[in-house]
Image 1 (tube, helix red, strand yellow):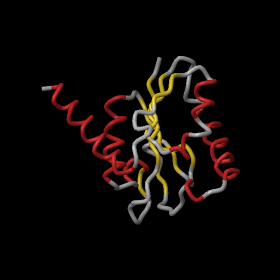
Image 2 (cartoon, rainbow, N blue to C red):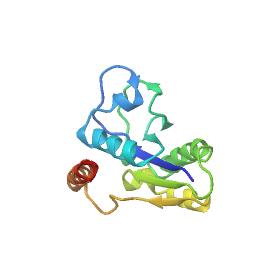
Image 3 (cartoon, rainbow, N blue to C red):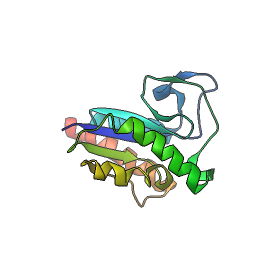
Image 4 (tube, helix red, strand yellow):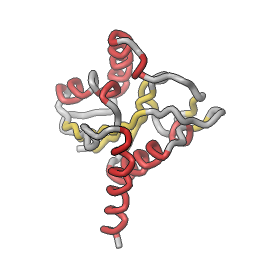
Length: 146
């Protein structure tokens, strides 16, 4: 049973191509990355433009979000992401998602139907609550190690 993490892309990016794990530069992304790197066996980025992106994939900066796309465009995006994601998952795997509703709404039912367990630890938290929650989790983990 593997534990896979999914985190969403963010608006703040470097100005030139980089590995996906380094392209996004916001505090929210950096803390989400630290969380999944500590809790998950592997992780991917849910990119509004590129779909499912591995951390080492080199990508160009972009200005796109699912929050401005139509329902049909979001469903098409989810179809594309699911086609790649289902190849990474086995039944009984655990998936932790650190992403907003629009990024996960069409993926979670498919992941569950695939026989995997889904955890959305920041569900119900607004953007201004997510960063403190992540900070608290990371600090708690540091304290537990010492």
